[in-house]
Image (cartoon, rainbow, N blue to C red; front, side, top):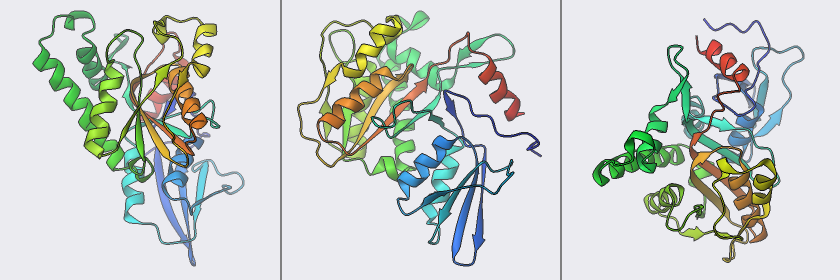
Length: 288
């Protein structure tokens, strides 16, 4: 049995939904959640008639609560189960990016050996030909890319808010030629049958985000432009890695300037800083 003796503590980077329960009161349903506040953003996005409610005073088991003045649709359970398996990313700039998910962390702790690539992280390494995969044959690179695309597509299919996106925004790389994130966006757009939109960097030949200083990453927030008219649309940004969020937020801001009403983000992985261990240890203790 899970220990609910202490208040819920969210990881500042990303969280899975720990648990939920539906409670009926006359004609009203209440959805109680044990998870971060970001999870409620996804549920209300998928069910616009739902409203965030205040938990009962002193409530520790269910820190988040949503009111439903209608019978919950079957798709709600599918979404809740999805949120227990993927990571909901904390949004620093909700006026730009409405919500974002990652399939998994790029690395995870394994048997005390330090962070090791997760299965999804391993797919990323193969697609990007990192490390020992530098000379990986193209068929194996393609196979890893296919697995990533299928996992992203399945996530979209289980999330009504994401599945309702009008277009997919393609993330430009920092070197000439299509990046891994760009190609993931192309393939996901094709799979879900949505038009794709190219995003242009304001400055060509930039560094990769992980090589930038804090000041340089801040420049990414105004570092993109979109020439197409996105007025009134919901758009989805697809990328391979979510690190600081500067790239996705910068593209989201470009989409807002182009008229988009809602901007959602979906990354294959959320990176994990090896120097940040407190939140990670907390998450691992909750899994046991």
